[in-house]
Image 1 (cartoon, helix red, strand yellow):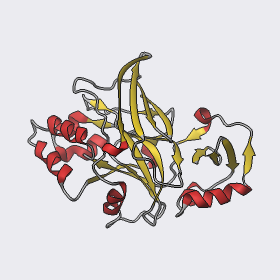
Image 2 (cartoon, one colour; image 1 turned 120 degrees about the horizontal axis):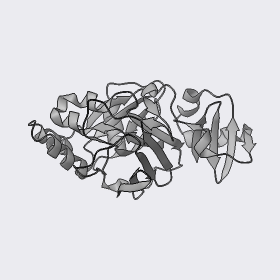
Image 3 (cartoon, one colour; image 1 turned 30 degrees about the vertical axis):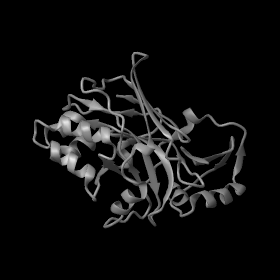
Image 4 (tube, one colour; image 1 turned 90 degrees about the horizontal axis):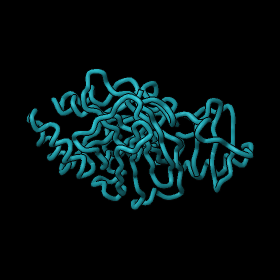
Length: 276
């Protein structure tokens, strides 16, 4: 099933049927263990919708949760990070963290810095090399269990991070730095590892880059990342965790204002963002 956040409430999609409730406290609604099971029970009391226009009625599926992110979880990401930081002497950092027991985890965004499907993400004015990073994003309840999945657009300044790895927070966290949506996919079982992540970027209505990769290419296990995230942090309302990217455009590519970013993950849907 899929759960969408709307301006006034929530919509659950199940087997091509839509169920609606308003008003709703989003934090309370999603931050529950066995979310699939409790939603199945909840929607018995919800209103049935005859139709629901997904593209025009939804918001980013976040209320008061933080967004965190993982880095260097795919081989392609390790290679790109090593190359971009070579001149600064930081190339070995990424090589070492790829093989280390402890993963790279960092704070990514607040809800105020996050946009939903159809929203405008930003590139920094002081950056010269910018890319989207398409990422399977976990929704984890306050008890530490993975309850759902969504699509994350981890906007990143490669020029700033490449200048010095210590600039990572500036390269990653700023206004409009994250896209999230279009829903939270809440399956009965974990998402299939062979599920594909796809990215396509359009400029003036023409496709200028596309790539795809299977989730199974990720080196780290999802629950492994969650375990490290929850070691010394608590998340009373749950948390989103972007799990890293394996799709990175070539070095000569950089985003420009007006570009359209389309990220698709099997079972979840498509997240569309535009560059402001």
